[in-house]
Image (tube, rainbow, N blue to C red):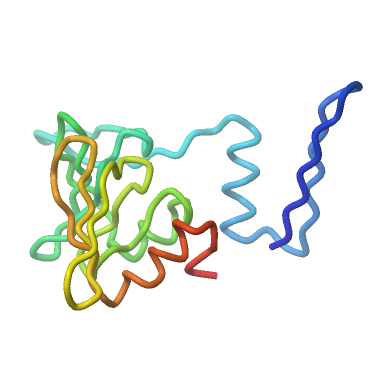
Length: 149
C-alpha cells in the first residue's frame, strides 16, 4: 500500500483514499476516518462487556479460551486468536507467539535475548516474550515496515 502525506499551508483539509476493493485493512482505515473505534466484545462475571482496543495490553489464548488483558481487567473473548488477529490493526497489535498478541503501543522497554527472542516490558511492568519465530517481523514493524503484508 502506497501512502502519500502532504502538509498544506492553506485551504481545507482533505483525505483521498483510492482502493481496488474493500479489504479488512481498508475497512479499518475507513472506520478510523469515520471516528469508529475498534472494540472487542467479551464476557466478565457472566456479563457481556465491551473493551476499547486501545486499553488492551495483550490478548492470550489459554486452554482453547481467549482472554484480553487491560490494566484492571481480564475479559474472556468469544473469538479465536487468529480471528482477533485478522480483525485488529496490524500496526498496533502484533502476534508475538502462537498463543499471544501484544499491543505495540503499550510496550515500554525491549531487551534482546538469546536465540533471537525479545523481552518486551509493557507499561504495567509485565514481561512478554516475543518468540524467535515472530521476532524478525517485530523488528521490521518497529522500523516502520509492515511485517504481515
